[in-house]
Amino acid sequence: MTRQLVILAGGKGTRLKDRLGDLPKPMIPIAGRPLLEHQVELARQHGFTEVLMFVHHRADLIQTHFGDGRRWGLRVDYVVEKEPLGTAGAVLAGLDRLAEQFVVMYGDTMVNVDLPRLCHAHEQSRADATLLLHPNNHPLDSDLVEMEAHGRVTAFHNRPHPAGRFFQNLVNAGLYVLNKRTLQAFVSSRREEALFNAECGMRNAEFKSEPPHVGCYSGPPLDFGKDLFPAMLARGVPLHGYNSPEFIKDIGTPARYDWVCAQYAAGIIQRSSLATPQRAVFLDRDGTLVKEVSRQGLSSPDQLELLPGVAEAIHGLNQAGLRAVVVTNQPVIAKGFCTEAGLQVIHNKLETLLGREHAFLDRIYFCPHHPEKGFPGERVELKIDCACRKPKTGLIEQAVRDLNIDRAQSWLIGDTTTDLQTAKNAGLRSILVRTGYGGSDGKESARADFVFDDLGAAVRFVVERGH
Image (tube, rainbow, N blue to C red):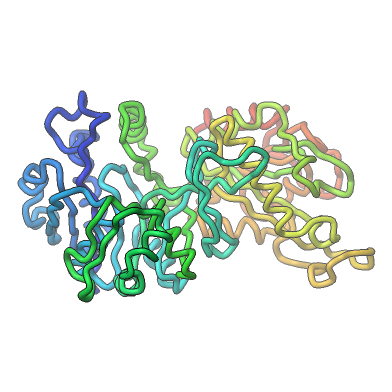
């Protein structure tokens, strides 16, 4: 099977001029090699046979460096843009050079992603396009993407975000799996200029009347995230969100470039691919991250309040390259006090509060069940003895599958003996914090491996320990 990686490598890098000199942006060095070479090497490692580069500024330097690609054991071809067409415009203009399924990567991003895993998720989803999404440490000034639990993208929320509304901390990372036939069908169905312009919010976009081929699109730059994907979603085209903590970061400013170089020097980028077993810290929610409320449980975002030092602690996990994963029992759903949609808003607020302090969670898993029946307003279908309610390990097992977590190198931090028993059952090391119940619930007999006053102290210990 032909595996094709499309790299959009036409950037000039105006903000990096002092670092680049006469080089095009994708050729900026990271650890002694051009950024673009890291991407080509990633394609080779994952069995890709073709790389198609869309080039513009100083295309000659890129073509001279990579040639036909034989040095990397694959084929490299080029499309030279006469004028910049934007990320989506370039791809639409080069449709006849594309494989039936292909991966799109931006040439100014440092990437370490398990590409076969991404492609498999796309194929399993049966969607027409898959977008790699990830949380970041500045969601309040980022364009955000909303998706359902099983990955269906439902909305795009461009900044600035309205005050008082809380969104998932999921950002379009600029890495896609696309089906050629989907783009062909989309172009054909929008050949009428007025309709296409109205949906994309563009002016003067033009499509030639013949079937899609090189040059089928001309006009102002067209962007995947701001123009094409929202228009596709509006027309009912199924888009899949692939939520991944793997490393992908643009180097578009001197500060971001320096940060990426530092992350590479520390080995964090090299360890970030889900092809490599991940170290994680599993976190209880109530009493560990947020204040405990009534015995009924937290059922409204108005009740949610971070415990002191929590955002700083999560930021510490992020900086150390440790996966921050929440696992929480939420029987408020089974008891009828809160819906799944309501819980999503609560978790959106949690992510927003953390994001204000430049921290993020890699994943949130919850159990909606409760084993005891016979209460007014309860949801009978959720009143079951399930496999996911802690101290059972269903939530941990799901996270291990999703994120390739190495249990032997991972921890669980919580405030109850239920959390400690969960860690023991799942083969994780445990830390009890003295916030929340502080271990006074007395439900289980398990004892903590370590005890600290709060999450901040626990995280500092884990990070400094290093394993």
